[in-house]
Length: 391
Ligand SMILES: Nc1ncnc2c1ncn2[C@@H]1O[C@H](COP(=O)(O)OP(=O)(O)OP(=O)(O)O)[C@@H](O)[C@H]1O
Ligand SMILES: C[C@@](O)(CCOP(=O)(O)OP(=O)(O)O)CC(=O)O
Image (cartoon, rainbow, N blue to C red):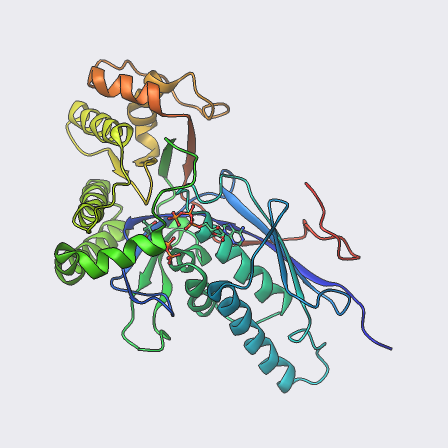
């Protein structure tokens, strides 16, 4: 009798925010970067993708992906590359063990939910592709390590390779032409430095103007400054950042994080035509962090910005009141503070114009911390007969 069973597996996966930025592809097809990068994985209690992957002979004939209840196009080269690579690994398993069900040839049905805005510069593609690859690897019962899976997730979205791990994660750029050594590795688990906190100021939840994918290709094609960044600046920052993490040295971690973000946005400005991801609200966030650090007499807070105006501010738990409390003094009315213990500080130390720009331009805050990598879950988004379940 034909096997009509619905096979399925589910996972959640985290967002990561880079402190040494990936910005440039040396091979756009394989998604190979011009430089290594390093990120902090953020807690899934606050930001996460939840994905269920299923396969069955009753599905299809096409593979499908439902994201936050709306059907997505899976015909793109990046999603196809992930499906193809995972099927190849499953086929090899099936070839070596005839008793395994033949899943590689069955149509896939993927259902996914992001609990944060998609394509708003909140690294949705990172959590999204990490969850997609991890869920299918679980479904196929692949013995692959997170580093092996990171090679596949990288082809979906570069930054996704870093979301296969928790804690502090490096994406080593690699040297091989086929990308086999362009993978993510753990620098330190979350438990090594669990006191790292992140405060996200959501400046804009709208879809961004220039996508990362096209922006970074124009940078590589036109920016002279980026050559110096790839050859000199990033290698230095990678080394300093790894050491700072090993030694839990926040001052160095914070300094490199801010200089890195500035270097990345400088190469965006040096791109022709120029790309501006930061706006006046972002600049106000930088000013606020500078003023908080000046009041403390040392670096206790560090800003970083991705391909959008949202600010991510890293700090250590012991400085929660001095950093998050100062921001709460300005933005205490907004959503995001509920259930988090943060004592409001006066805003005297922060420049009055910056205070006003933040009040006018920030729509919500997210308080989170360093967290774990993908977590397998029994909580499924697909029923036993293969129908999507709405949560
Ligand atoms: N849960 C998901 N499952 C599969 N794909 C996803 C998921 N979430 C997002 N994506 C893919 O990622 C795309 C958004 O990526 P994009 O790089 O534009 O934004 P971002 O990730 O928010 O920003 P950035 O990566 O620059 O920080 C979506 O259009 C979708 O194709
Ligand atoms: C600024 C960044 O967030 C850029 C992320 O770029 P993506 O990983 O979204 O790009 P693609 O590989 O084209 O999908 C920096 C970073 O996360 O390192």
